[in-house]
Length: 234
Image 1: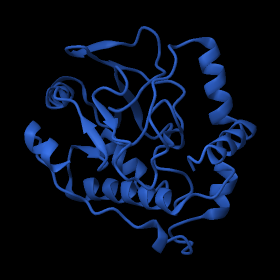
Image 2: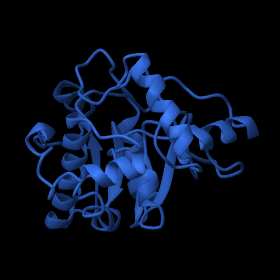
Image 3: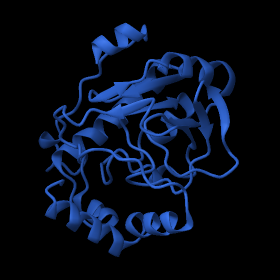
Image 4: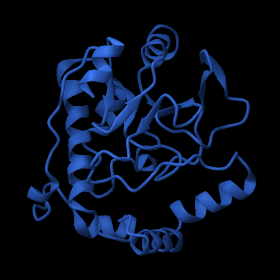
């Protein structure tokens, strides 16, 4: 990661991740009962540590008074146009309260696409939730969004990339094409990685119905996690 950021001339600092194993039995930091109610399962130590780390980053953004920040996980692969996209966001588009998905945005509102830089465009995401609409390997968060989000998942009761729980608190924006500007390096060891990221099918009614079933219904989430366990991805 350091080599990539130096090459792209993006100023950065590392934020030490939190080891979720140290907090699994502390009800101030992890609420297993609520996690099981919301996710139909217990969270893994990796998921708890990841969620705590992201919440801590939001708190740090607010503490320092930063107008916005690019948040990257250590397994992110960065496109060479990332600095230009960030400049375009900062100079013309970014508004306080925005959270911008840079890694993935498969489902978005028709007619919302706005040119950003080269082949990249800004869109209005829909069906924001866990899974193939967005992940947490790379995104931009403004100070207002960070302030709204920093205490929502403390104690942790959902994974860091289950963005649907922040609806109404932030304004979601996405960059397309998906899995291009930032993507996850699945060969890099991660406690939360769940296999190769693949692009979802083109927007269609059937896609929306299937996505909504597996993300927003208890039966769909239960079957999804059972399938992941069977395939050894959880």
